[in-house]
Length: 200
Image (cartoon, rainbow, N blue to C red; front, top):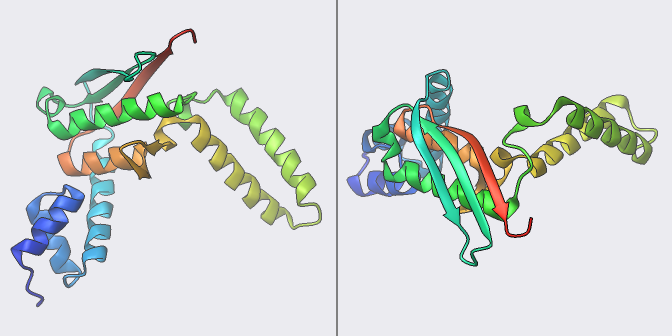
């Protein structure tokens, strides 16, 4: 069996934010392979997030952010299960990160479910027509795949949860939320946001 030293466990914890025992078991499971252990922790976090998603959220924060120039202000409502978590540093940092993301991107909608059905259907029609025109003669399944890819891109442009999370733009807001739920073990949801711009 591979010996896992405390320094490696701590390094993985610092990188992922996962509890020490979870980091140790992930490293043991992967024979000390750091990258594979990160993957294991990510999958576990997703599983925890999926299990937590049905639990009631009645606590949380309304977090306010004003941009340094004083011309953009954002309020985000992010909810969790307990007031203990609402006071947690990681939770509060997530609230700030979401507010910064709203400030930077000014997304039109919270997530795919918030996009009005007629707006999505209209975009789907336009994208389908353009794709059929530009890919004339290609098989239907190839065109369908291209349309699906272009719609995914459109949703990513329109929705907050699919935007790059400003403090760590290698991940989306939804990926960061899922990781935080996995780390804390509570249901955490971004419920709504308001962005105001001077003269806007």
